[in-house]
Image (cartoon, rainbow, N blue to C red):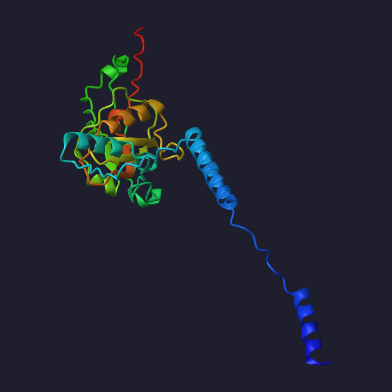
Length: 265
């Protein structure tokens, strides 16, 4: 194949493979479409602005700080109200601590307290209201009558306290007078008493469970309790002090039973 054939073949191949843009004249159609699209968009934006106006934004107020001091009367009243309405103060329970010596009762056995011995009182000798009848033989006896026996001095009533209460006794030698004596054989009366710090008798418990605690006469025990509650004591720093009080009854508490006079014949 010569050069002419190769050139013809290349020309055919170039004609088949190379695209040739056709030559056209200048047209205003594309710019017209662009302007029409721009106008349509502008009309659409205008309609949206009319139908949906933009929201007016309100700016938040600036931050402010207010100081409440007690210098001003209004602020002081407000602070007092806040303190009164504090739930922590109302809801909290204040604990009350009891004193350390509350409820402490020192046990003291009954045998540790010394008690006086009971003294027997001889009955008083009374003269008969009318002399006995005398016979003729008795009238011959001119011997003098025997002298009357001397009257023994009566034993007074006494009140004794245990060691703790004896030091606070304000009237140790005060007389003990009973309104109503008794004819029964009286035993010592024992009370368990509690004396307050001001010297007042707060508690008074008769020890009637034992034989030596009661006088065997309820009326005498009642009178003894009234006398004990009215007995004065000196004040002390101890809020409550316990001890025993013992009444020993003498001849003044016992009524002598005089024999009835015989009717004269």
